[in-house]
Image (cartoon, rainbow, N blue to C red; front, top):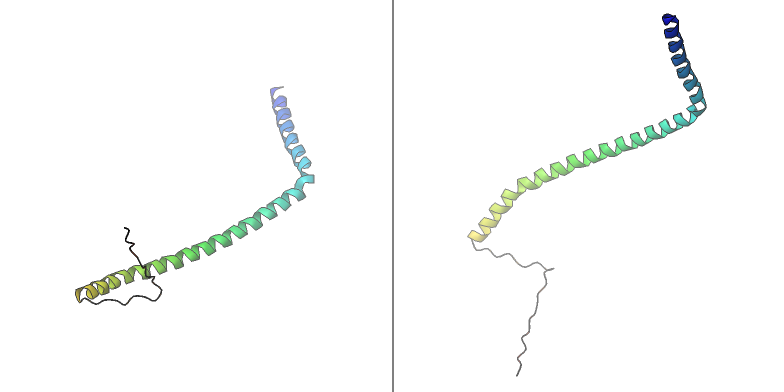
Length: 104
């Protein structure tokens, strides 16, 4: 009797699983469409991530180049100050004219 009861419980569990599978069949097309859209979004995100990684690597290389130039620029600046070299003013710098007004 106990063995038959165990078989009946197992049968009912399996039957519920099979019924759930059958109920989901009409939704299969919708689920596949959703999965396809999700896969397309993931593909887009992977492409964007790859582009971002490439840009980060390019930026890192540019920063290394800039960093390697800084000591040279500082050395040139020290050389100019040491030898009292005056750099000419650039044409785009503005000159401010200040007038003083004498009041009575």
